[in-house]
Length: 256
Image 1: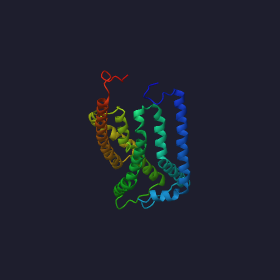
Image 2 (image 1 turned 90 degrees about the horizontal axis):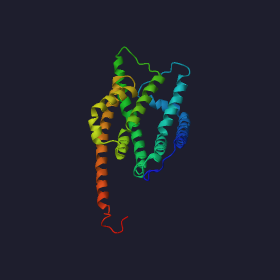
Image 3 (image 1 turned 120 degrees about the horizontal axis):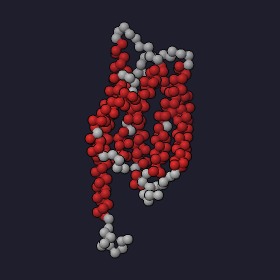
Image 4 (image 1 turned 90 degrees about the vertical axis):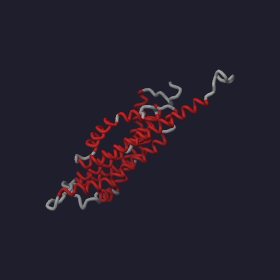
């Protein structure tokens, strides 16, 4: 076992650890989802507030949408627990110097996750709906299915919540030496292509939604470059300071 690593777990132990983390994560989601189902009607009315009215086209559609809304709220409410369980699963494979940043990263990941979802829900979705509704003209009236509307909102909110994790992930990868600002800068042209593809995959198939996700994602990429650059400079200064403070074994009679 490496002296700097917390542990070198056998493969079967990793699987057992994964099983435990999944059980805890799923349990947390279900508990929050059950609690959210009690208020699912109020939640659905809140989500539908940007449009005048939504309709259900089948007898079971409204009920199924309430279940899906409850699960979505369960995932969002349990996000801190899910993020924590993810990092606890990764923790045994980290070095001791990397463990120090785990809990700040858990907090930052939670803040960015909720920040991305809230930015989408309160800013992007109302603007997107207002823009898209104008294409009906005077002769067309929108008849929006509640299930289709829910899919639209869900994909947008989760997409923004996930992509807002990019600076946090970049910071961690930069801290452990996997990423560098030079690497991210040189890969900018490829990042633009990946951003366009992700925007098309994660959002509904309309150009406005893809643009609404793509632009913030590119700014997050540039922010990630800055974060990794500052992290690299800080680590370099710390290493130079440690090297300067390290005693010379040839001159120190008490060394080694």
